[in-house]
Length: 385
Ligand code: NAI
Image: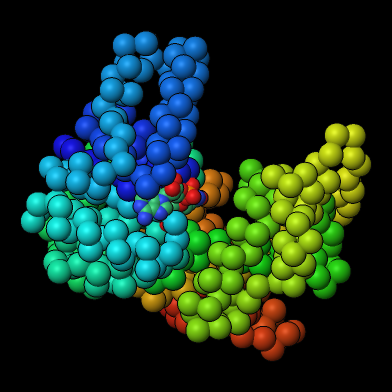
């Protein structure tokens, strides 16, 4: 199979590596020669490291590198079977590239976007044959993250969807299917992990270190929400939240937090700027968590039940299957357990009670319980996974 990748930045380079490792011939195209050079050098470094670690021999490393060619001409995609676009998140720029690309590739070539926040339908509409268009959403770093969300638009033909899923699975990825709705699965369902932690902080219920400690210690999450926001970058994380909030017509559930906006405005972006919720300067002292069991339990239950509610509502709105929602969160953001499996374990009725008590306390929309959870509790049902 011949694969074209448009854009040789972070994601494009990673996707090219994944496809070439799966023995596809790959052409990477970028408007900037400098970006192409950088991508090539980065891959060389990765390959050297993998050889040093004994993952494979130099022959295999060369084979993977030789599978990729680099081009500053879109025309090189002429004989591609699949083209994945990973350029700047600008709808105009993306649409122009797709229109030009369609004039170059064959009738049967599948055209895909790795976009995180644009609607697949709006991008598909830039083509004369929109039924060949689909969303293929990788996670960063693409070679390491197992999950890929495949997102058919309303225009996408069934055969294109099936061929895409089959191809990406053959690349060794865990493929889940999501409806073309804002944030797809992961970037939607994960919002309360950050949002509810921020809310708890803003209310003064617990501090950053305590909340992080709680989520790791009781929840088994690899990183606490504040550590993770610092890792992702507070500017990036804030933008995702704001985009999802706007795209869901200002649903209060996704309301961004001033705290994060201020950090972002101050340039406290997290690890990359040396300071975020924590100070990363050498020798800097950071606050210690308050290891209070009752407080920790309360904080953990609150964040978890909000995550479960979001996952349940995602199922309720048929954005993805129960199995795919759980696979997405365990493989896309490394949650220790699928949220719906977690709900089964805790008991659906208990989740409803917790959510209702939050709603009764605050009378805010963000704490409304998903109708699906309520119905399941009433009927004594569990999620079938
Ligand atoms: P990046 O900024 O690292 O790379 C973008 C590349 O596209 C640059 O090398 C740039 O020269 C090139 N480019 C810009 N306009 C072009 C054009 N008209 N034709 C050809 N090349 C062009 O961006 P990144 O982070 O790799 O993101 C790319 C896409 O992937 C975006 O749509 C983003 O939403 C999506 N994405 C990003 C993730 C991330 O964590 N960075 C995760 C999942 C999706």
